[in-house]
Length: 86
Image (spheres, rainbow, N blue to C red):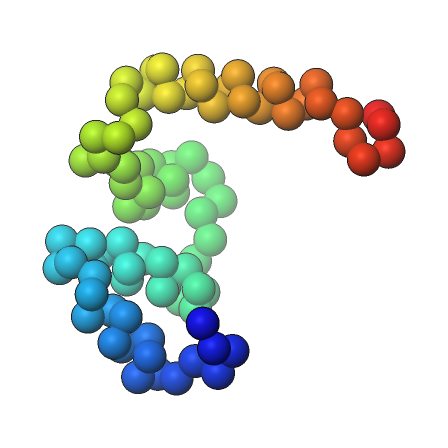
């Protein structure tokens, strides 16, 4: 991909995004432009569109098993030595 990206290049790429995913694209673009205020509390999080964002995904399997897998991966990373050997 070229370092000089034009508005037309962006628009051309967006034309390939299925209409059912436009909401995700818009949320992402809003996050990039900082037009939405940051989420600071649990109440704000529960009212945001983040809750349930992946509800329709079928590639994650059981949410409990997915969370367990993430925890196992995090624990494995913590046990691995860093570049300094710590």
